[in-house]
Image (cartoon, rainbow, N blue to C red; front, side, top):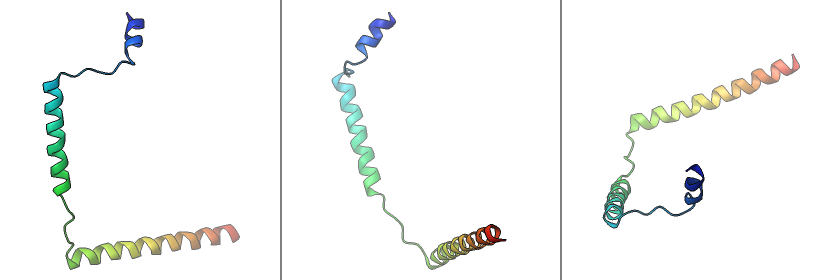
Length: 74
């Protein structure tokens, strides 16, 4: 039984036409929904928060590098 399943596993799956049509219709609908989504413009406060976080990350990376250099030489 197992050998027969392994032999047939390389054959393409057959899907009834009506099921395949429904799946394709759902796929097209989902694609249209996802394509219609767009990025919302950020307000001033949120942009300021994001730039503050970027600056914080850069500062912390610089501090980690300085501490690593001090630990290697000290």
